[in-house]
Image 1: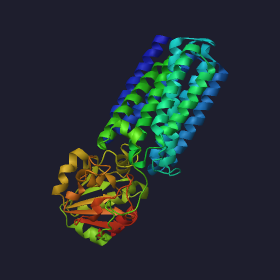
Image 2 (image 1 turned 180 degrees about the vertical axis):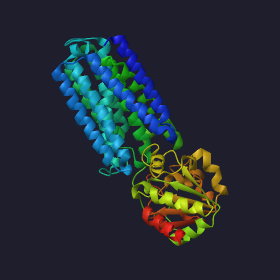
Image 3 (image 1 turned 30 degrees about the vertical axis):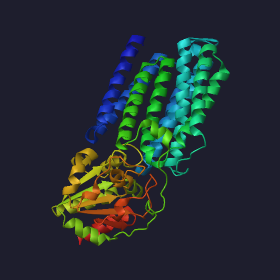
Length: 466
């Protein structure tokens, strides 16, 4: 295969990746977007094989590698629960980072195979590309591993704040830049592996101070890192498909990170440096005064919603943990049979990754035209009879709107407290990922429904059926 024809096929695969991103921007076209992405990746892999024309032994190794990786991916995809999707995404990001490190190491020790010179005489631009690719890849690898451990509950979700962490990070960043310059000018293998070690350490230190409330931004940010790592290695390999794909993933991840930060009223820098949000804490309010809450039952909730004209459902991570989305869809169907208008309100950072709630609702076949983003539905709460909050916490906390001393002040929230009645499904009075008390619990129009989310909704469904 000629290089010009290969470049054309890589361009076609790049166009398919762009169409995939476009398709994934809306639930109704997401399946088509996935198909475009898979076809594009298949075309890129096939083109690379035809262009490289490996020996039989090399081709066999490639096929074995694809079979092992593809087989493992297929098994994981079939077995993974939707609640574990955020940590799976973080884990896959780590593999992209590790791949970038390994490809850069291969290029360093066998540059002639990549067409970038010979050992001891690698092209200068290739050295710069390798050093940047391996640095970003190593940061992505360890950062994603820490994110995976936090999301999977194997490490505390609380921010781990080391003394003088900012000074340490700045020092490591400057050392990393110095090592990149040394490697690019001397081709020192020692400098290369020092870059790897420093970047691995920096990846850990960047993510451990970040708490659970900022995890959606972290997942999006690591997605961006993995893209830039792939793009950097694409330049080293002179592979147009990697460059295009990496740039698309890197830029889209960066844009999504910005959207997530805007949804939390936080700057990207404050997420990286702030370490905001932790595990559930005590239920005492900020002034230390214990306040009473109004507690209800499934029958109370069923009565209120059955006699309502409009109900807005607000799902959160608690719904995901309980796997309550199918029961929730059944509840909505029962209410619609009674003539109740039902809508779903999604906050940009609900759940543990961007789009988490949308995916879960789509899995339960919730009609797309009933699901609305914050800016499209927030004004409707004041005209609603019931806001049904299931597992969401920080994204409904009025303190973000009313209390200037609150750590989350200024974060856009869903104004569920403006509904005539707010039904709040929660296991306990524990605080959310931000680690602060939710003042919504104590409002006169709030009724707390303490139970597992799925069990509570199933009981409501029984009451509605009767």
